[in-house]
Structure formats: structure tokens, C-alpha cells
Image 1: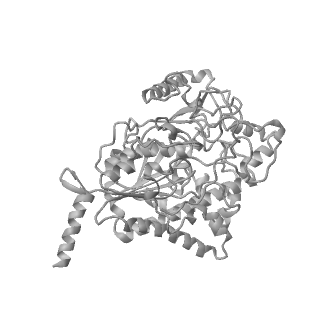
Image 2: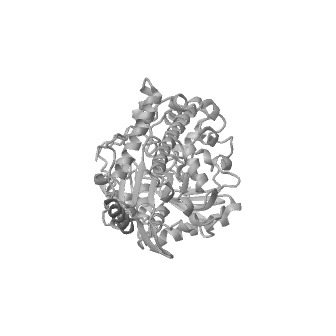
Image 3: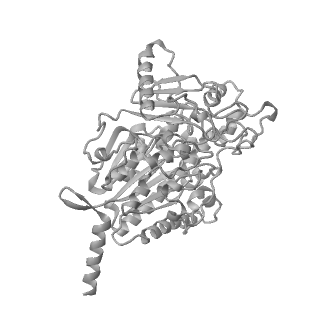
Length: 546
């Protein structure tokens, strides 16, 4: 009798917490697992069939991401609204363009406006158990406010995953250390699951930071067997193809594989609890690689293009590759609609739920043919008349158009004063060009910038840029040749410039509304000139226990 009563009690709770009314009666609301890597870009072996075995994808192995893509949907045109950690995450959490998130639109000095709704807190209000491990919204204050701050943090089992390469490399028994770290991942997730009420749907954010610099030198090959020499001839044309850069990239790919292995831990736990097929699983990253030219903080594909795979049991027909353009701000309304909720009207993102439920591949929604990205202040601050670098872009299947509102400014931050000299140690912060993270590649390029074969690459990375850039992606997929002034492309440029301006005005971008100087003034412009200069993006620190 007691057992029957308990089962009935759980059924009532399941109806209250885990069901949503719809056609044909009540259906269980899905759990939501969002795995979000720092600075990951678009590197996963699932993309080999698209990019080719001779691409960088041929050197990385991500079996768990690949499984999600195979059993669900792989997106080929997923981009971020801003290739900088905090504004990208502000955009994703609110489902809005980054410039609509107040002080969340910048990185250094970001402050959260609690009046702006975010999808996890909206889901919490509707009965979801929410929680996160590792990075959600930082650097910024209050820390992780868009996800409910420390009250919803689960890291008591440990946060060594954030320093995976360094810790495993230093261990005498490397395989044992790997197991220990992945046990921490499982433990944090287990604690989160145990804290929910019976039958309560949940929303969990998994945000480790090991793909953010610094990387442990040589760890890609030592821990994952990624031979830097096999990257020769595969690096993007805007990077120096030398031993330093190849090893730097190899170490990065190794951390991507450790992220993928952690996803496997989460999938195993879902299989053990029997919740795999009623969990909407989404895996992506917040922008491209840091410490590399044209990556993080840039609007080229190397900076904005990210991996994206989605799985949700029978609800999302599997084995599909979708070419629709998706902006990561589209995930917030997607999560809400999947839970049976109506997204608030201020969300500028568009749910991709219909695309996910479709049985089609290729271009599914004919209206999803472009994506808008942009950037304001990252780390570099207003100093001696220098202000952060503002630019916006529109990316279509055939073209990338970039509008630079201030071509007199330095795109990667101001150079150091001439008297400071060039003092470099590999993988140490360089005092100038602060909007590019410190890295061995950056150090090498600055040290060799006057060499004839390096200078053109250095100028592309650090030099000032024109007011307009246009790239013909059919002829120039790596976006190396700006054709904005080519007479043959004037009609395409006018069309794209007009479309970009229309979208920016439509959604209230301060760069094209009012006098256009909002981001050039306090508090957005940054600390006063007398403050000490920044030394690259703040180094990641271990999270405190909840």
C-alpha cells in the first residue's frame, strides 16, 4: 500500500513539474543540457565530411559531439552575435543582440542589469530546477547573475576540468588523473540531479574553460596524440605555418578533445538515469580561438563561426546536416519553446525548434540566410585618445561584409609606447595589442613582424583596417582579399551594407541610432586614462564552491 501511494505521489509531481499541455494531452517537458566551451570555435571531427580530411578537422577527434550530431542535427552556419566571452554570453542568455544588454555588451567592466529576463531564470519561474558548473557569465558583476548567481552553482566535486592540460601533464599517472577529473564532472552533475524534486524537469549549463588560454605546451601531442607536424599545410592562410603555431594549435585541439570527453561523462550519466531521450542536448562554444589572428574579437569566420549540434531523442529526427544560419541568441527562445513557454517579446533571437523538428537537411527555413555579428570593447580601454574598436558584420552564404565605424582605431588594441621596446617570453602577455590574448603565436609574430614573409600576416592581424571589408566566400573562403573597392562588387556591397544598416536600426543598435557615440562614452568606454593598462584578458581562476 505504501509503495502504491509513493508511486501515485511521484506521478502527481511529474504532472505538476514535468508536463506541459499540448495537442493530444499532457506531454513531459524536456530536460535541457547545454554544454558550452570557452573559445572553442568550430573544431569537431563531425565537420570532416564538410571541410575535408585535409583540413584541421582531420586532426581532431570528438566522438561524443559526433554522436550527438549523428543522432540529432549538425549545423554548418552557427555564429555568435559577439566574438567576446561576456557579450556573447549576455546575448545567448537573454536571446537578444549583445548591444541590447546594457553593460553586458562589453567584457572588461561588464555589469548585469537584473531587469533583463534570461531563459534559465524564466524556466526556474516555470518550475524547472536550474544549475550550472564552471563558467556561465564572466568576467562581470555580479558573477553569473543571469543564471541566478552562486546559489545555482555546482562545483563541490571539483573544478580541475578547467585546468585539464596543465594538471594531467604534471601527473605521474596521467590516465589516473584524467579519470579523477572526469569523476569530478560526474560528481557535480550528480549533485545537481539529486537536488531536484521528484519528476521536476531540469536545465543544466556545463561550461568548462580548458579551451581558453593558457594551454600547456606540448599537451596536445602528449595527452591526445595530436602531432603538430600533421597540421602542416592545414592551418588557415592568415596564420604563420611554423613549429610554434602548429604546436600552439595542437595544444588547443587537445583541450577540445578533453571537453568532448567530458560530454561523454554527461551522456553516460543520462543513460544511467534513463533520461537521455527526454533531454534536449545542445553543444556549442562562445566564439573562435583566442590568441590567434582573426580569431576571438574579430568578425571573420575564424572569430564568429562555432560548432553546434543538437539531440533530443525522437523529437529531433537524427542524421541531418542543416545549413540554416543560426545566431546563438536563437537558443534562448528555442529552450523556452521546447519547455512549452512563450519567449518574451524583447527577445530578438528566433527559435529554431521548427528546424529541429523537421525531417529535412540542407536549407530548412528559407528565411535563415544571414547572421549579424558585432563587437565593442573587449579588454583594451580608452587611453590617450584611443577608444575600443567598433565593427558590425553580415554573413551570408556567398559574402562577408564588415562595417568598421572607426577605421582610425587599432582593431586588436593600442600598440605599446615606442619606449617600451619588445620584451617577449613565449606564452607571456605582451603589453600591446591587448585585445588579442597572450599566446606563443602572438609572441612569435610580434618578434618576427619585420621579416618580409611575416609582415603581411602581422598587418592583417594587428594593423588598422578600412571602413568597409567585403569577401567573396566562393573565391576566398579564408577571407584574405578585401574586394570592397573592386568595381565588380559594388552592387553586392551596397545591398549588404543596406541590409546590415536596416537590421541594426531595427533592433536599436546605438552605433546607428542617436549620434552613434554611446559606446564611446562612460561607462562603456572604460576606466579613465590614469588607470594602469590591462595585461590581456583576465586569467581564468578556479570557481569557488557554491
